[in-house]
Amino acid sequence: MFMERGFEVDHSTVNRWVLAYTPLLEKRLRQFQRPYCGSIRIDEYLP
Image (cartoon, rainbow, N blue to C red; front, side, top):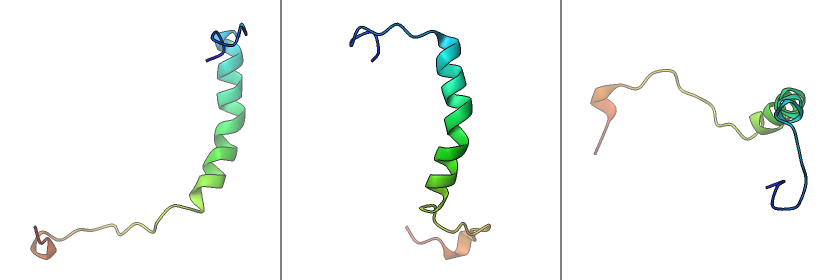
């Protein structure tokens, strides 16, 4: 994407962005996560 727009970005810069912004994104997206039920019983499955 950056090359299409004429920007030159090193892979270490992208890695730093990932390390910096992943915790923020995870925190923001957790509020939309549905509750997880830990078990699924085979006899309750209806095709």
